Amino acid sequence: MTEEELAAVVGRRLPGGEYVIEPYVDWLLNDVVGAPVDGHWAHPLFAYLATARGKGITWDEVFEICGATAADGPMFGEHETELLRPLKVGEKVTVSGRFTSAERKKGRRAGVFDIVAFEVELRGADGAVAARTRNSIVFPRRAAA
Image 1 (cartoon, rainbow, N blue to C red):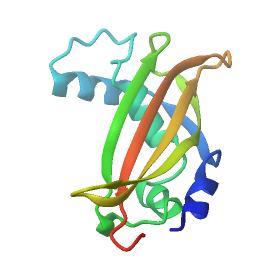
Image 2 (cartoon, rainbow, N blue to C red):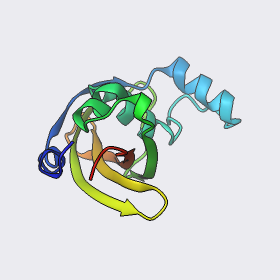
Image 3 (cartoon, rainbow, N blue to C red):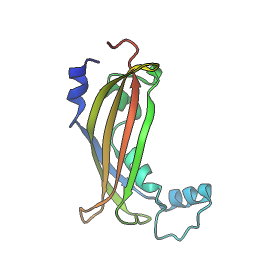
């Protein structure tokens, strides 16, 4: 991927979609992490799960947009979750997102690599943002100059 192609990724929107926090999935998640289940408020991890599942695109498709495949060895970079209000069990949220930055770097030992970031939001039925995640992926570019 050229630097021009990389720059063109910034601003590209993710297809998005909807995600429902199913009661049984909330129960399973709480069981796995050893958290109490109250049946009303969803575990905070759903802020990430709903954005990852509801973004409307697979990880392989994210890699393809960034000019890579899973075989190229992309690595999860940074992650930040912003929970603006608790999520409710059974709630349907609308998911939308976009690529926010893409930067080519060169390390002495790592060689050339790209860091691509994207942001995904969850909106409740009222249209207000309930949660937001920011993620970056590091793409090794062994053949890049």
